[in-house]
Image 1 (tube, rainbow over the protein chains, first blue to last red):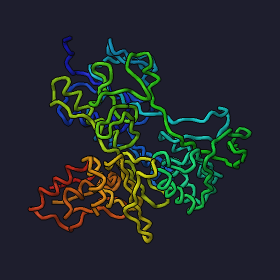
Image 2 (tube, each protein chain N blue to C red):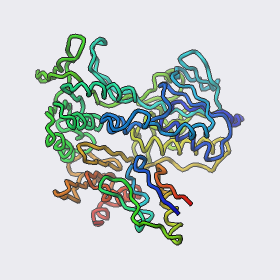
Image 3 (cartoon, each protein chain N blue to C red):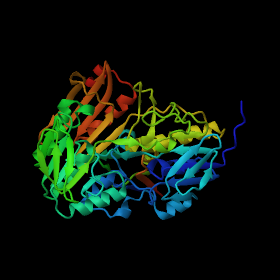
Length: 407
Length: 63
């Protein structure tokens, strides 16, 4: 067996939630070597969930999204290389090249480059068409909302839903364009998807389902959105929230196995020795559900970074053998004053869902999902406390009948 | 002993509620709240366990 270098230099690619969590975890577990934090954006690590919530509403200034104070960051003793995307990784030489041509050697590297927002092609000179992934994206959308535009939201997922809710809160006219017959139905099924769609309808959003965008049109500024059914939506601002693409272009040809993300083993190791991945970009086999997937949730970025650091330290003889990383996914969304929470992996099949709680007075709903005879997911709308036991039951692979018996 | 819950950090996991149900609950907005005005010294182990269970370190025990 080849002799492994000592762990003296760790490179973290992605100055994100996963990145800063990994740096904190390394220090908390006693790592005293060099940690370099590489970031494509010029910003120190910031929090993304508020971007489509408190930041869009103007309730938060941009600096409130900072994940850690200047003092806390200083205490971690990190070297920062911000505003320079990584463009190449050589797993044999163990170095990373940045856009400015500089290189950085590493003993171990953690890849947490996340995703980029999926785009709909449109003329580059046409302004008014946005995606929402970064802090700069959110600030640009907020500025556009301040001009009281007619808004088209493309995609009825959580990002689109939160933008629609904020635009309606401002009293703007909003059209939502969703390719599926029912928003959210690919993940939650038609019935619970309709529950989410009803929130939009009740708050005055014009929801168009089963249609896609054919073109964005306008004379330099967006004026119209043409839909696949021939309809035209007048709009000055379009926000496209149709999913995201793992940021792995810079790794193609490096020899690191890629397949809709960076392929990892159950311990967050990539195919290259000394290289690990965490967060939105990592795709691995989650033994709890028996599926190979990426998880694009805040909670996963944090938990997987901690898991990856555990494996890294163990691989270099500085920690106990890690356990396979097999979390229960958890995500939440705030829309129109309602909180939607999803735990586990809901199934879209009609016979997989059971509504176990409904209270019209508080507009609260809890539904659970099964895969065969096992509880695999839960959805709560305006019922945060009722979701609690189901997260634990999903982690414990509770039998469906046993889960239903708990009330 | 003073306990603080940072509502900006809290994501409503509810691990504190499951760990120390006599001390923590989730409000209607999904944010954890401390149920008692003062945490007694004999509840220190419970409140520290709840703080340790928080995935986002939103609960801090001072003193």
